Length: 99
Image 1 (cartoon, rainbow, N blue to C red):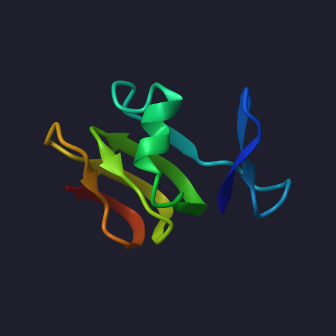
Image 2: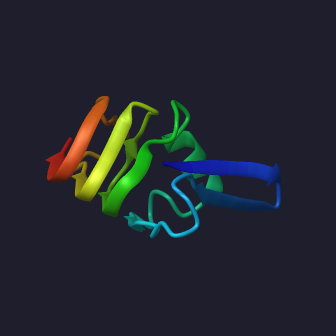
């Protein structure tokens, strides 16, 4: 699981909860929707998803997450709408999901 740290308001970091030897996932977020901190904060206002066993996460277009989202393996999320759509709670394992 990854946890967002806000200890220093000028420096935000993600800490891996499964130890120093854990490999962080490759995360590819839509640069038009997640470029600014405010945009990312808005998409995770219902909680940060678990990336504990995630190898790769790709997100295209606006998708909001919650703490009940669990990503494992390689996951790709696409929203063809310009409006933000919420990803339903659940486990997403080695899949492509269109909202």
